[in-house]
Image (cartoon, one colour):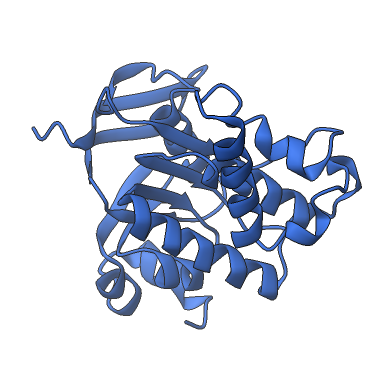
Length: 231
């Protein structure tokens, strides 16, 4: 078992009597770019939460390399009633950086998500898409080995989505981070991932290279799910 990979073994999550996630085995290789897709209620968010450590599986283990820094963006991220700058700066205030380095990190993160013009605006005044970009800037201001993003562009228009996807690609190239992104759009998976994991009712029904899954799915449910999308 590689110590530079993330491993899930026999992980089960139950809510009462209901099994919402059942992953016998899953390995996420370092620097891999994984998209998790599937219908609503398939277990995508639950998978991300056990990887992030915000939810303990009822059974089994989740192993993330001890030295890895993990960045997690939940599906409904929160912005504070502070300036856009302060919303991002708080993510790096305990990182042991000098004031100038902190300022550089924050400004660069806001620039790459296209929010530099609103640096003085209050977080509570932003649109949903702008708020998502600010919370992504918080993640990008830090140097993570593992990025866990839950529907990171769901509230964005096309322009905002393109900006964020380009910023994400730059971040992954720079830090060789492992990405796991939950997305409702296979078209987004096509753009930002090299591997796809398809969930249905908490179980992995198909996984493999992005091109193979999207162009030639083998599972009947996956075929039906993808038939609703024009890729």
